[in-house]
Image 1 (cartoon, rainbow, N blue to C red):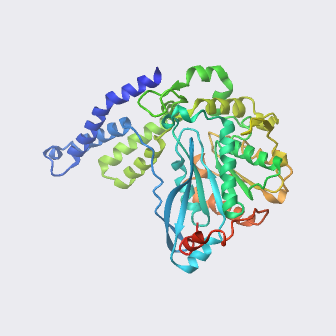
Image 2: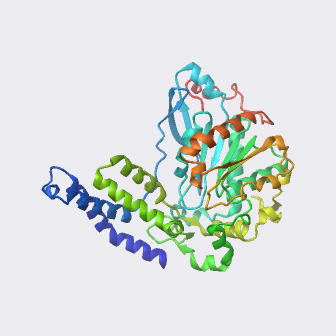
Length: 445
């Protein structure tokens, strides 16, 4: 019933939220008689804050139309490459009509960015994608809101997540011969499992894996997130945070962990910080500091946009990653598409270079949790392993913002480039795809 109550409350508040938006504009418009009041700016700011606290936040767009490549603006076309029931593989196709730029783009590595399925949309990695596009062909997993997926599409399990990652890797391998993988936060675990299973089967594995701020071994330096998962039983999560999608959504009846509950948990971790941020926004509006106010809007447009997760996937993640520590204990069995169980064995990875990145002040994935991947992949030569702790960086700072752009990204770029030579599959020949060859005269992936 909680989901239905939440939706009823949201619908009830919608007219008041719309009124607050209109009133804010009325008091801030210089031609309005209401704006002549000496307190008009404060009243407008108050209504604007009410509007933003009460509005419904939709899925943001990536909004990347161009990217600078060595001083040249390259056009970006965003498109869906593969469409699965719970995820789209989104590609950022780069276009150029300059032969020199085109030749440079064609030689750059292909990278699959696996975005987290943990409450926020993949657009949270917009800064990551934009930086990577300067030197790479970029694809990203764009996870769907489970409340929009009809029941007829079936359930979504942690095993399915692993299969999706493998399918996406194989797609890039078929297109380019091989690829590199970057996982941010939650997907570090299923990505490592996906690559491990491919190695165990004797399949070609990605040339490199970059794992950023993820709970590979959640026993190390446990955070508030880890403690919640370990202090509550599996049954507690099923009984207290799982609800059915209301009838006004395509996924009506699906069992999910609602996004609004996840968002409440995000805010509860740092309530003082959010309260202070909103108060600062109010003051920026009064002072006419449009730049600071817009920065606040951009951050919270992303932060407040959340999605529902399928209940099976969420509960299995809690159990496997945070309660049983199945990956590091060597007890994780993944059911393959044929129905057989396969043991996840990271030690079977021998050729994929791996780079782990942690933030010194990360309060979601504690120190050492991501670095633990090196102990698991012990058959990868030490020369193909690297670890970075980013001083002064929190969780978001390792993939977004100044520290990401100035400290982390250059090292990720160099690591990928250093390990771009390795086992490759046969790429499609030009003779087999004459139309594609013609198109590539103006594009570079």
